[in-house]
Image (cartoon, rainbow, N blue to C red):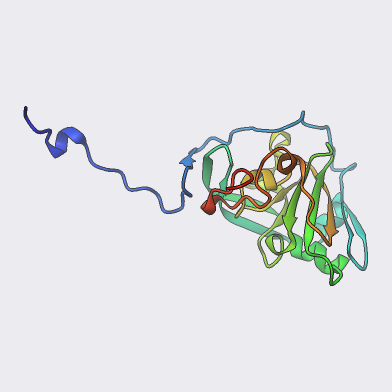
Length: 202
């Protein structure tokens, strides 16, 4: 029986080093995945509150948030459903800026992010500080579409995207970790795509 030649087998494609294990490049697409129906939120009715274990609970309106120092993210995002999207560009404000105003107390170690819909997701405080998280209202220079969390969503791009809560309205600092919506339903507490932390026990 003849042996297949290299040309018959084809050339092996090198895996893009930006792709975490178990992920594929979705290209120009951006799949829409959500646990609830998209709410109707206008910029005039949106606000973001930082409360809980902070010295100064603070709420910003749309206009007040837009007067904060702007910040942006350029890089990749990864969904637990195995797609990754390269070279995204989001603009908004760094979570560091919000926390600097609210001033977390010494016992604050975790954050519960809450959406207008009631959706929640929990994060270690260390995962949303030090330039690792944003509140964003623009994608590729345009207003963030409602199906992707517009007018404003949380962005924590180094974790699976269910941690980047859509339609974000509140960040509550906690002394102890508490599971959010998906975490109560079997998803991992942290969700690091490079460690494939998809489900509890991973």
